[in-house]
Length: 161
Image (tube, rainbow, N blue to C red; front, side, top):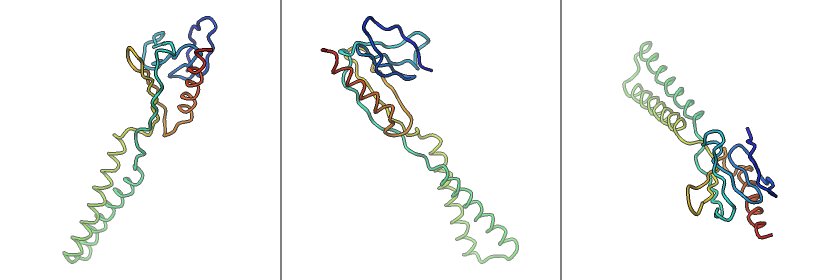
C-alpha cells in the first residue's frame, strides 16, 4: 500500500514504496511504523549518506526435519529389532546413539530456523538531529534497496541545481 503524501511546490517523487519516499527535496520515512498520517519527512540536506547491509540468515529447517525424522526412524527400527530379535547390546547402543544424535541435531536446526531472523537488506539513513530513518527489505542484496540508495544519491546530488 503506497501512501499519498502532500508534495511541496516544485517537488517530484523519485522513489516510493510502502516504507519510504524519496523526492527531489525530502526523504520521507518510517511510514510503516507510524500511525496513519504520521511519518518522518526531512530535507535531503539533513540526512547523511545511507548505510546498507545484509542481515539474518537462511534457515536449515528442511535439513533439520530430515535429520529429526531420520533419527526417530533409526530409534524406531532399533526398538523394533530389539523386540523381535533381541539385538546385541553393542549394536543396540550404536543404533540408539546414531538415532538420538541425528534427532537432537535436527531438532536444534529446526528450532534455530524458527527463531533466527530471515535474510534481509536494511538501509539506514542517519539523521543529523533525531532518529534514523530505516527501511528493511526481504532477502540479501534486495534490488528495491539498491534502487532506493541509487535514487537517494541522485536526489541528493541534485539539491544544488
